[in-house]
Length: 339
Image (tube, rainbow, N blue to C red):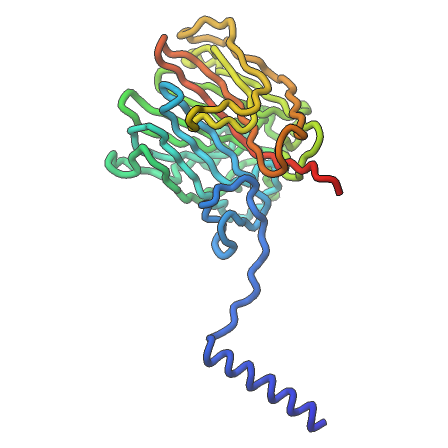
């Protein structure tokens, strides 16, 4: 008994010395989830560390090119795409990475909303707004953190969270945008969004929308983004589209590739799965699209194990020298190591 009391006293004295010399011991840090494909400088969620979040996320990126391949804007973020989001008046925080590559413009605003069948812009809000043309000016890379209440959706179920960044340039506005699906659960009537897909689009004042779409394999939405590692053959569905708004111009070219490095010297188009031009008349406002609902298959044994990026390009010409391109990019984890 005396020996037991001595051990207890010894432990208490040791704990007291730790508190005196080292201060209080912090609670164990929650593990969190590492965002797939996150850039090395992604801030992550507070308290979790770089690239870490409280729920599964994947790094999605849209690009808007204007007026050539050397001048364009990247918009990317770790997002809970294809995940169930349970909300009760809470907000979703995201860190947006904007790279104005060769672009001498300035960041104007980020608008976020949720689209459902009966509410095309639920909770629409400018979560970032800047009118000072001397601030957030490119070329350069900027991080912008925003919070948005996806619970503003008027229906539960699979809905589309829409995010569009406006960048003011000398001849108008460039707008890269990311749209992703989330299973929003907040107790309201379930009514899944019919116009479902995950996409990125490029937009310019002179050409409007050039969509690069990742499509669902079913008529009702099913998750399309691969959070689990892939091996052997991996397939996905892509579409290259404009709109029927009477403003957007025809799609004139397209490409689907893995790991393109167009900033390299010399540039590389990566592993090209397909590319081409269309028969659409350029510079014309119309309804002529590129290839739609095409199934592409990657033989992942031709890739190294690790993270790779599938990239969908959609081009539309504005003139003989100017072209708008919408790009959507998402990561896959290749794992072909036996065992």
